[in-house]
Each structure stands twice: as C-alpha cells, then as structure tokens.
Length: 425
Ligand SMILES: Cc1ncc(COP(=O)(O)O)c(C=O)c1O
Image (cartoon, rainbow, N blue to C red; front, side):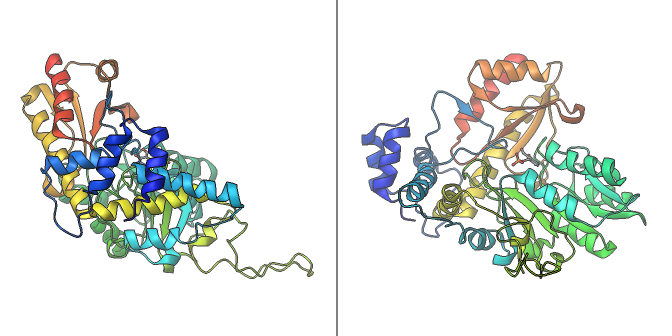
C-alpha cells in the first residue's frame, strides 16, 4: 500500500495526537506491511506500531468498535485528498471503482454491490424490496439492533406481515434447531444478523442460508459486524442479500456502507429508489407513453444520484489498509483479544455472567456480560467517568454491557476494564 507519505504527514499535522517526529519515524519504518506473512496475534510490538497509525486519543480506552471503528491516517488522508480534488478541480464521480473493490473484498461480483450510507439503508432496501404479502412470516432474533427490527416492524404495520423470533443459543447447532422449529408454510424470510449487536456471537449464517434455500425462503443477512472482522465469501455463504457498513470493522469513513444482492435475486428484489444510475439509460419523457426500458443490469439499480467521492475513496483506502496488514492477521488478532476478554471475565466466576458463547466458531471480537447485582447503566457511567468507552445494551431488556476490540487495542486496555469490574464484584 502506498501511504502517500506527503499527504499522510500533511493530514497528520492537522489531526495527529502524535508529534511529527513520531509520525515520520512510523512512516519511514513502514512496519505494518505484512507482505502476506503471518503476524502472530500476540506480537505486541507489531500491533503497537499499528496502533500508532490511528489518531485515536491515548486519553481514552476505546473498547467500542462495535459502534464504530476509528479510521487510521491513510484512510483519513484519502478522504481529504479526494474531497480536495473535487473542490479544487470540480472532478465529479470517482466512486465507480468502489463497488468492484468491495465485491472482491467480500467474495462477490462487481455487479452485486450497491453503495449505501449505512447498514440501516441496506436492510431497508432488502426489507421493502422482498415480495411479501399479509400473513407472510419473517424470522428475526430477539437480539436485533433497531436497524434490523424497525424496518420489519414497519412492514408489519404497512403490509401485515408477521414477525417470528428466536433467541440465539450457546451453540450453533442449537441456534439452527431454534430457527428450524419456527419455519412453517407461511414463512418467507430469515432476516438474521451475522453477529447480533448485543453480545456479538457469530451466528452460523452459512447453515442458516442453506436452511433457507432448502425450505424455499429468502435469506437477508444483517452483516453490520461481518465485513472487516472476518474473511467473507458471500457467494460461498449463499445469502440473498448482505447489508454491511464500512464504518465499523473495516475502519472506513463514517456514513458508508454497502448492500450485496445476489445476481440471480436482483429481478426478485424490487428497487424502489430511482434516479441517476439505476436504469439502463434509455428513459425518455418525450415519447408517448413515456419510455422506461429497464433497471440497471446490476445492483446499481438500488442506488442512484451523487455519491460522496471523498468517502468512497476512503473506503478504497480502508480496504487497502486491511490488505496491507492482511485480513487473516487482523481476524486472528481481534479473535485473540476477544478470547482474552472472555477469559478475564470468566475469572470472576459466578459474579459475572458472560453472555457470549465460548464455542470456538461462535465467538470473535465482541463480548457481552452482566455483573451480578450491578446495574448495567451505572457501571457504564462509571466506565465513562474513568474514560473507558464500552456500550450498554438496553435493547429488548437484555440490559448488559458490551466490549469490542479491534487491532488498535491491546490486552492492557482490556485489563483496565477488568480492574473496573473487579471493584464491583
Ligand atoms: C447488528 C447491527 N445491525 C445494524 C446496525 C445499524 O448500523 P448503521 O448504524 O450502520 O445503520 C448496527 C449498528 O450498530 C448493528 O450493530
């Protein structure tokens, strides 16, 4: 990856929490390029260097990547450079190479990716576009984020669909059983998160999609936490749609996302927003009747109009950044930190309840927990007063705390949180 050193340092001089000398030293060493080599998840020296590429303040302990991922300098720099390009030269567009780049990153084809602003937008395109009538049933979890709850509840209000719920189990096998037991002749959709926002367990999405296929159902995945956290091969996963964002685990700019729509599903998933780019370019108001020939022969049918060139240039840079380090290296590091967090929480015995499964395939970088006899919101506030940022989870009465760790974190930061827990138990 070319760090565009001049730009990197230029933006850093404005934004950095580091001194110029420190930044120059990092840029010169160029330490983080893995060149396809395996980086050990506990190679603290390497990951410490990676951390220095983030403007993230040292004053706070940021353990909330599940809400959004702070961007590293090269991403911020790409955003600024591209925006300046538009503002200085009037360059228009420039985001056409983003869908193919995202597609390659997630194991899809270039014509299967629609650009969005966030996961919520992608889920809404999928939710409203899927053909459903009154009485049709949609399966969700009891752990939904508002972004995968309200669209379906709104469709229930508008079209009379029926929402069925399951609670994710502590094993993938039991989770699949719970979903299977909800399927009947009215079921049309399984709309499940890849990882719920509440306690971050990795759900068996490939098997869920296979189950959907076997039963003739649509599989619409809320992939808010998939992209960037783990290697994705959406063709292999077999979902019909996968809504994700670039502002969490991809460490991209805030307000960027994408929706994958399987090629063969595009003529089933109705597009409702139309405008520049969503048709085949043959519309004509001067004929009588007016002419509209068809939709774009790609997922471009789901997004139209002007896009933020700076933001999508930065999405490209975020993918380059991930690939510079190596997606597998990143995954192993954050899974290592997630396991470290689990082990530390389990040390408290029955005084702390870990809500995330310990099953190897069901855990990764996000953990949910409760402290016995301690109000979750009070503990959250105590953490904030001590400059530790986690998330509280009031959704659906789950009332827990969530800790999520990315490559800029280290075990010492997890220990800081555990010191706070220790004071409460
Ligand atoms: C599981 C899940 N789904 C959907 C969303 C909504 O994402 P966005 O804010 O990008 O629309 C989130 C955000 O935290 C989430 O965790």
